[in-house]
Image (cartoon, rainbow, N blue to C red; front, top):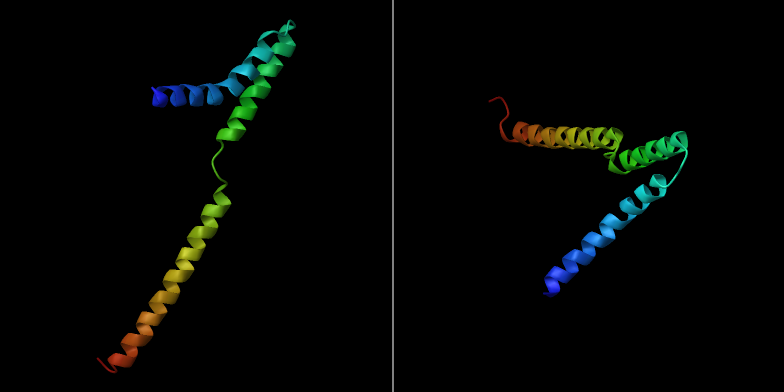
Amino acid sequence: MKLLTSISLGLIVVATPAFAIEQNCRFIQAKAEREACYHRQEEQLAARRKPEPAASADSRTFESLRQMRQDDEAVYRSMHSICRGC
């Protein structure tokens, strides 16, 4: 019973802001203003759903490549010291 209550309260909290925004636009009488309101809502929702910028992914990739190169150099140095002339 408590689980059902907490789930329903969670859904209410999550759904309320989106529903409240929609209700605000719904009651605008002028069609052009109402459509502009809906357009602003769509932009806001798209901005919230936008993924993390790709620049940070590129920097992570660059860092991982740099780390792999350092590891490779360490392995080559140790192999060279073990096996001279092999």
